[in-house]
Image: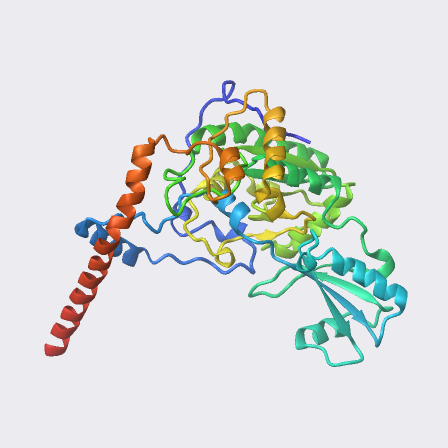
Length: 421
C-alpha cells in the first residue's frame, strides 16, 4: 500500500494547477459514469440575481454552502442501496430461508451495516417488469439464485455479481481493503485514491508513482473553501477537516480487487479490458467519483478531480452529482456522530501522523459532548464577531423580504409595459 500521509512538498518543484474550462460546467464527460444525470448551471440567471442582491445591499452568500464536496458527502449523503434479488420458486426451505434472513439482517434497511436491500422474487408468482426481464436472461439457474445490482439511475441498475446460495460471499463490504478504506476516510482523508492493479505490474507501478508525485503538490495548492463554520456551512462531526490524500493499492490477486473491479466496470463510460489497471478516487461514504484508466490519470486529470471534490459543494443534491457508491459494511451515522466513535477516530488520526496539521472544526449539532470534541471555530473570528454575525442574519431577514418584493414589483411593471406596447 502506498500512502501519501505525512508527505511534504519540500523536495518537489511547485507546479501551478492547470485551469480547465470544464470546471465551469462540471467535470469532463469522459471521466463520469454514464448513468449519472448531468448538472446544468443557469449562469446568466445566477449572475442577474447576484447583481440584484448587491444593488439591494443584501448578502449573496446566505444560501451558499462552503463545505467541501468530500466532507458534505461524508456527513450528509446517505449510502445508495445495492439490490440483492433472490429468485426462488414457491416457499423456500427452512435452510434457504434462514440464509436469506441472515443476509436481510445485514441490510442497512433492517439496522445492519451493509448498504443493500434484499428483494425476494418468487418466479411462480407475478414479478415486476424489470425483475421478469432479469429472470428471463438468467437461463433457468438452480434456485435460490442471487443477483446483486448496483444502485442505478437513468441507465438502469448494472449487475455486479450473481450466483447460487453456496457462492454468496461471506465478507461483503468488509474485506481488509474495504476496512482500510473506511479507516482512512474516518481518520480524515479527503480522497483515497484506490488503485486496482492489473495484469501488467509495470503499468500499475507507474500509475502509483504518478499519483504519489502529484498529491503533495495538490495538497499544497488547493485551499479549503472560505466560509466554513458560517450559518449553512457548519460541520457535523469531529473528524479533522484538511486537504489530505492517500493511495491504496489493491493487488490483482486480492479478492477485493475482483469485487471493486466489477463495480467499476459496471459504471465505466468505456469498455474496460480484462486485467486492466484502474484508478478510483473515493470520497464521502465510500463513493467513487469516476473510473480512470492509466492513460487518463495524468497530473491535469488528478488536479481536475481533486479541485472538484475539495471545492465548495454548490450542488447539494446527491443524485445530481457524479459518482457511484461502493458496497461497504459500516454504520456511517454511528461512526460519524457518536461522540465515543468520534474520539476514537480523532485519536487514531493523531497517532498516525507525527506532525498533524489539523483544522479546528466548528460545531454542526447541539450536543454538548460533540461540541467539546469539535473545539473552536474554523475561521479566525472573535466571539463578538460571531454573535454579531448571527444577529445580522436575523436583522437582514426584513431586508431580504423587501428585496423579494422589489423584484416582483419590477417584474410586474415590465410585464405590464410589454402588454401596453
